[in-house]
Length: 295
Length: 233
Image (cartoon, rainbow over all chains, first blue to last red; front, side):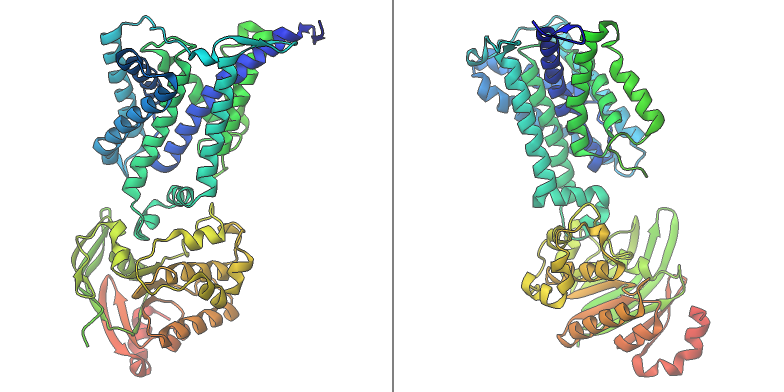
């Protein structure tokens, strides 16, 4: 079979697929972080915990009520979004006007509490969650074997990311969000209920994180620490892409997934740190990130 | 006739700094009132206080009889206020059309988009352009157009001519005069005396966050020495 740079094509294609698959999660998570940071000016350290809650909500709803995967994919993120809305209304709203450091610390505290409670209840071992039978199995494409569920995750994540981008860049609601990101008090003075917009935005970011968590559940195990494992990489992705950019967050997410996948083929030892090496290089040459606006 | 806007003993703060010190003024329906004074005297702060954009305020602000002091910021406009902020407040990440359509309707007799494009033909041509790509004059027209669409009773204009070429200042004056003829009430902050004099019916002279004097247009020249002293021109 054909080799590319001395690497068998199926191996390369397989790793690129895994890269895209991981990138799908990076994109969904960094997109939510970017939206939340843009409007609320909060670096949401609870993002990984919300992702984990999405996976657990799906797992528990599945166990208790036997709901099918397709319902869980929407119901679990909705529950997490309601939880996030309560957090925003009850806690984050009181930090308005304070240094962003307070938001970072508060959300970090929330993450520790949520993860601690989950560990107390479920232990650190992972719970199994099966993918829907319609998506099990794999196809042989000739040059590679493609697991159906992974392809599904990549496509759905792309669709959700693009829909979110369109919502923000092409609709009236998105225009309100962009305007409030630019000048919150003025938009409020014009008669827009900005406090509600803030709550909805935080809840929406949480929805995206939990949605990623549900999709992750069948592949990675459902465990209390699944969020803190991924969120560090996601923060690096956001730093590389630039905090305020929606399109940048999506693109950087997929791109870094791919680069990570490629590194696994070329020099596996570096695959765990390549994202951080890129982050360091980007920070050195473009401190505001690849797609961030230079102040 | 009773006042449309009535402000009494207004105090206002930006964080710790106390800027307004018991300011009182009134605006009657259909009237154009100009606030004049030095930089930092509290003119812009007065408009911001009306819009609930200060960190703290005390005193009385009534619009059309309604108390505005306890109205949350996002409900203030619904009492009939159209606010054109300092530096125009055009959103750069929004297109011209998005800027125009951003503000919620607050009254029933707002201008339709067709009316607006007749008044401001440039805005239609540049509809898809980014808000930040407009010239200063176009931004000012957009800032005016987007509040006229909402149907306000009272326009608050913060230095509408600042940084604009004389020919643009002239066309903005023409537009405001047309609005005035149609019965619009306006409260204007202005450094350009010539512009203010051509438009306003009454003037309030502001010094150190208080009213230092007020007079009608035909008394302007009689107060010239006081104006010169307070404003320093």
